[in-house]
Length: 179
Image (cartoon, rainbow, N blue to C red):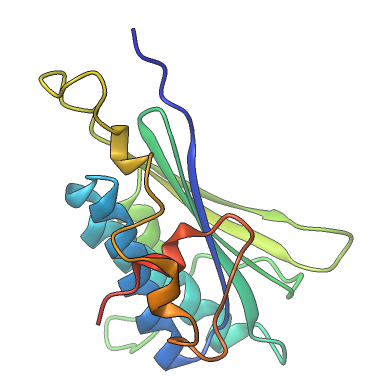
């Protein structure tokens, strides 16, 4: 049996509308690189909802970190911000234009949650998706979920491509910028 190591990517940003779209594209490209195409739409929707919550509710500091981690057959997506207030799932009126984000995250994910981060300094909101197992017909030396390369683009290509968007210490997602 081949043991599959964890895959991890992190992107730091200010949760402003143009950045939310960029991070959604970065994460989608990284998931495609890991051969997790069936999870792209749900992960992108969940990230959009969580980052929109940071934009709308975490104030005044909109700085946050998006992390994706693939461990065995589970993809965990988390957003960490500096606002210690924990989110609450609400019942939105049928005509309301907001208030459904966390309910949507709950609907698209296997599970989700929130936990304080640091000493009264923030929180982490996360959700998990079941990941498909690697194809057993692949050669034994094939990279499981693209684990032997940093991403589909060389990091040098993207230096300065995303002003104001800094990648975390182990964030090959930045090298996966598309469009």
